[in-house]
Image 1 (tube, rainbow, N blue to C red):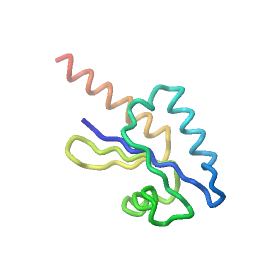
Image 2: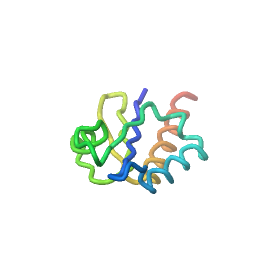
Image 3: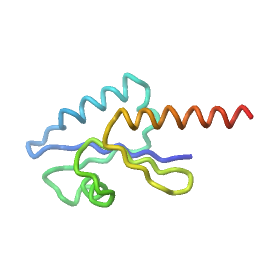
Length: 101
């Protein structure tokens, strides 16, 4: 089973970034929020926040982003919501096909 982390950014003024808020709303409205295992915060005021560390580790320079750890322990990073959504739909189709065999 894969593990999915959603990383949101808190700006220097303490507010959630606009794009992060929009993606959060899409996750809720499209029912994908239930598949998120962890939410991490990349706080612009704290270079050592979990989200900032994850961004550095995976070479990501913008938020929001998703980290999908597959069954083999490999991590796939998505910094575009629609690519993440497409990946999830394909993954679910592949799992459904495998289960029906």
